[in-house]
Image (cartoon, rainbow, N blue to C red; front, side, top):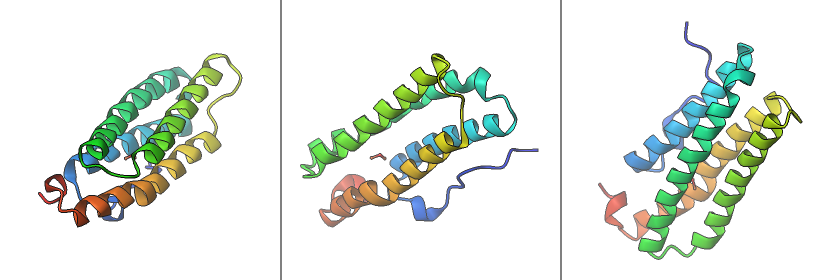
Length: 142
Ligand code: FEO
């Protein structure tokens, strides 16, 4: 039986662009993977691998967004980039703390990831999506 998901994708998370929605779905699936590992007691053996993939993939996704901001002169670029950078720094710190044995995986960490991502999508990401859509940027009017 498939493990219960912590985050279920629904259309309220859509920012109106399939490529970016798919990138968000990929990060959501990594958080769900972490949650599944946590609930089955397997977290410690795979956490490093999941966090590595999450750091790499989030970096790829964030750069994709930031490149669009630069290309279409989005005024929120530097503020949004700061938020991205601080998320990556936080996950890198989690990874280091786990590796050093300072903390185990806790539900609080997983909830932090869920809360951060869903609030970021519904907040900062929707702001740029609305802006691009208002500006009739072709990428957002497929
Ligand atoms: Fe989709 Fe700003 O991260």
